[in-house]
Amino acid sequence: KDSWLERALPSAGPYIRLARMDRPIGSWLLFWPCAWGTALAAQPGGPPDVALLGLFAVGAVAMRGAGCTINDMWDRDIDRRVERTRTRPLAAGELSMPQAYAFLLAQLLAGLAVAVQLEPVALGVALASMPLVVAYPLAKRFTGWPQAVLGLAMNWGVLVGWAGARGAVDPLAVLPAYAGAWCWTMYYDTIYAYQDARDDEGAGVLSSARSLGDGLAARASLAWFALCAAAGVAAAGCAGLEPPLPPAFGLAVGAGAGLLVVQAATLPMGDRAACLAAFKRSHLFGLWVSASIVGFKLAQGPASASARKDGDVGSRPGSGPAGEQQSGVHTGPL
Image (cartoon, rainbow, N blue to C red; front, side, top):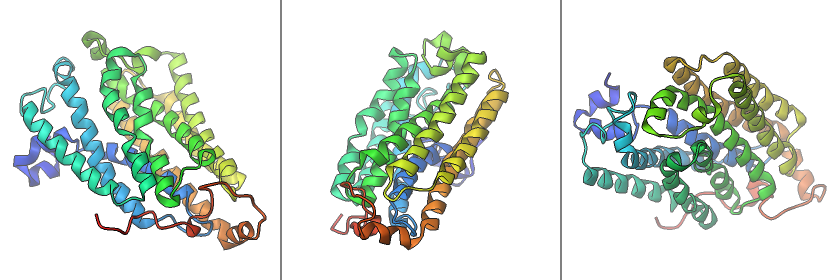
């Protein structure tokens, strides 16, 4: 069934489907880690940098499309042997490889146009993710855990978001959140992979769904990924920040992960439609974490920042309140 976007731009239909513009869930999954990093870096008592979030929103659409294009270019022969993917534009012959290369270049240039508006450190961090974007399609051929590579790429925005807001990277704040986000990707993309587990076996494609199987151990693993996702984000907020967020933040994030655990326990793994629906719902955890960070940051009030300035809280490079840093958006010429 054609999306509204394809109906509005019928001649662009194959490109829309190649970049998955008709399925925005992937862009949300790429955006939320950027929002986590930006929100964690916000000044106590203040909101995250809205202009920076706007850039990340545009960049998420462009780079998600580029990632899907790269994936389909690598996998076009495999996609023809998998029921769900055989109608993708490259697998079905709607687009040629030269057309795909040209479209990929356009998307990468759009992403670069966003990236160059970031501060230099954030730009460097963003560009460093490109090898991971290319590596994921290859990982499906050589490891039973390609989602582990995907998680490294999808959540790089945690680092970029912090660097964009602070002008530096603070490992104590961003690495726990990055690890938590990686676990979240392991959760939702394993569920996504269950849609194709049987076809993947015939096509020789490896995935975490095939590695885990569909028994009790698989459900326990998914629950573990969900809880570790919450633990990583909670550690970043409650232990990695100066001043830290209150313990209630960890409870809030844990409540969101609890819903993911329930979903994993009740998911019919052999039902493709149910797996797709669960995958789509999983992005709400990203929204919940973002809202929780913003809410607890605002609740800290300016008194927390004042206490730090008076010397009540120590300082680390890149850990000061965002209000003491430059804006995350580069103001020089594009």
